[in-house]
Length: 249
Length: 334
Image (cartoon, rainbow over all chains, first blue to last red; front, side):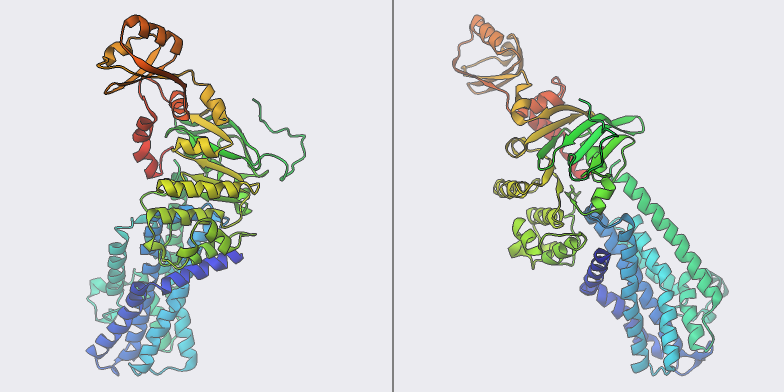
C-alpha cells in the first residue's frame, strides 16, 4: 500500500504545480465572489441567511466543481492519449487504483479550494459564522463534491485529449448557471427552477445553504448527490473495463 | 515439442523457466491471433520476439503481461500466473506508445522514476536506475520538455525501476539514433548479465542478431522459427549472388534457374537464388557477360523475410517494415 500513497502524493503534487489549474480553480470562484458580492446589498436577507454568506456558499461549491472537473477530465484524457495509463497498467499497481487515486486526488485538491473561498467570505465578504457552522459547512460542501469528481473522471474516459477541455468548461458553466450558483434559484423563472432541481450542482450547494441558514444539511440533497455519484461511478467502471479489454484487441 | 507442465512436479517458483506458454490459443472473433503457441524462456536468457504485424506478437505480449488472459492453454511467468507475477513487482515492461510520450506531464524525470520505483517491493536505487538509462543529467528536467529519444529512455527507466527479474521491451530503440541505439544495447547487455531475463520485440533485425541469445519468429499466430540467429539464418535456402554486368536485362536474369529476386543498380547485379549452383550454371550458359561474382548465405533479414512473408508479395525487409509501420504506431494491432 506504500505504492498507493506515493502515487496519490504524486498526483496531488502534479495538480498543485500546474499554474493554469491553480489559477482557474482558485481564481474563478474568488474573483467571481468579489465581483458579484455587491450585485446585491451584502446584508440583504435571502433563504434564511444574508447574500454575502449565501453567495460565499455558492462560490465555494462552484470552486469545488471547477477543481473536480478540471482535475479529472482534461488531464485524464491527456494521459490516456499519451500512453501513461498503459504504462501504469504494467506496474504492480492494481487496475482499479488508477481511477480511485484520481478520485482521491481530486477530492484532496477540492478541500483547500472550498477553504480559500470561505476565507475570502470571512475576510472580504464580512461573513460571520460560529466555528461549528464553519466546520460543518466545509464538511458538507466537501462531501458534496464527490459526484463532480466522478463526473470529471468520466469525462476523462469519454473525451479525447482535444475534446476534454471544451467539454469540461461547458459542463462547469452549465452546471453552475443552471444549478443556481450565480443567480439564486428563487430568483429564476419557473422552468429553470425545475431544471435546477435535477442538477447535482444545485443539491451540492443546497447542503451548504441549509447549514448557513441554521438547518441541518438536507437528507434529500444528500441522497440525490449519492445517486449521482453511484450512477456516474458505474459509468466510469464500465468505460474503464471497455478500455482495458480494447487495449489489445 | 511438448512443453505441457507436468502436474506431478512440485511447484517451485524459482526453479522453472521465466516464461512458459503451453498450447496457447487466443482468438478475436473469427481471427486466430495465437494458434497453439508453445514457448519457453529460460531464466537469464535474452530473447528477441520477431514477427510482422498481425503475427500475434501484441497478443502474446499482452497475455505475458497479464493484460489479457489466454483463452486456451496455460501461461506461467516466473512460476506463477502472469497477473500475480506483475503484482509481485518482479516484472518490468516498456510498452509502445501511440503519438504521445507515454509520460505524465508536470513532473520532473527524477520524481517520476522515484514514484514508479515506490510501486515495487524491492526497487533499485533511483540513482542507479537514472544512471543506467543515461538520465542522471536529465533528472531535473520536466517530462514535457524531453525529446522523443529522451522520453524513450525515461520509459525504459520506468521499466527497470522496480529491479525486475524479467523485463519486457517493445521496440525499445524505435525513436533513437544509431549512437543512442548502440549505447542502449551496451547498457542492456550489462543489465541482462546480472541474471535477468530480457524479452524484446524489434524491427531492427541487426539488434536481434547482435543482442539476443535466441530469436523466436511468429507468423500468423504460430512460432515458425525458434533458435539462435545463426540457426535461423541456416534454415533459409536463399543464397545471394552479386556480380558486375554492363547493361544486364533484369527480365532475362529473372529467367535463370533458381532465381527468386533480381536487383540491378547500374552495372551491379544482385540475385537472390534458391539454388545458387543452378543459377550460376544457367548464368554461364545464358552468355550474359559477368565478372567479380560472389555468393553469400542469407542474412537475418533475408531469413526473416523468407519465414514471414509470401515471397510473391514482399521482396525485402524494408517492404515488410514499410507495410506495417503505420499499424505498429497505432498500438491497436492484433
